[in-house]
Length: 162
Image (tube, rainbow, N blue to C red; front, side):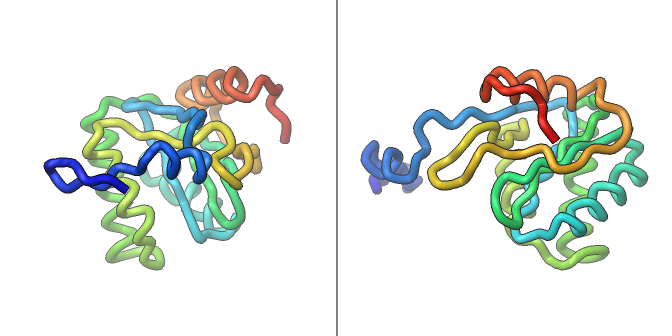
């Protein structure tokens, strides 16, 4: 690892290659709600998705299994960044203080998305982690989800398979 003047740790090229980080493609948006749920069961991911679908009227969602006990939830409603920040802040608050078990990874992930002013989830394999798989869908699929599926299909040259 190398350190820059600001003391940010930057992996060396060898470390990036060893971890399989080269060639990773992500879906990035500032127009909707995406959640990266680690150390979560599918049942818990569904419960979380239905809770926020209803609370914020997010129209529909898909759940992708990114690796063992890790899921991505992509909601369909297209929003402005100001609304995205408001909703993600409420979700982060819920996880940290209210409705759900504490999820420190989700809190950290949301803060990282705020710093770069957009959200990103992985579309292809990463090191030993497989290509995310479609696990569950509910509601509308014509907004953000449609964009996600187009990017996913182009990246993986596969048709959508459930």
